[in-house]
Image 1 (cartoon, rainbow, N blue to C red):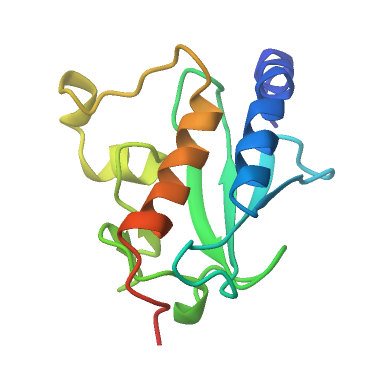
Image 2 (image 1 turned 135 degrees about the horizontal axis):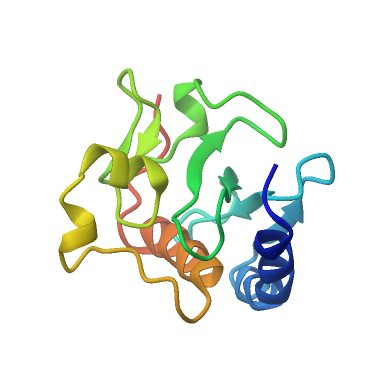
Length: 147
């Protein structure tokens, strides 16, 4: 369970994420049973009929990056290849993670990132930063859905 500070700060920042996703034909849903967990419904601009469900779990917001994984639907499984878009750094072979400098999984794989230009920045609205990175990946680096 996340701290009260984490939950309050997330609540304060989620409005900007809702607006951003709405502008991109997406949606933000909070998991009522686990309030530090959100579902982002995302669509690539080049394939607007495709829908992706990213689960974002914050342990210590805004101080640490979240865990992010694609699932086959809300409350669905993450270990299904077709749930994942083909985007560089989105890995399904055995690890099921996003190896990018906006995820906890990326920082686990790259312990050198905190002391590099890829370090996590906790100022501003990190939740919006994560949503923008996910949407940017779909808009500019999308190569379809995993088979």
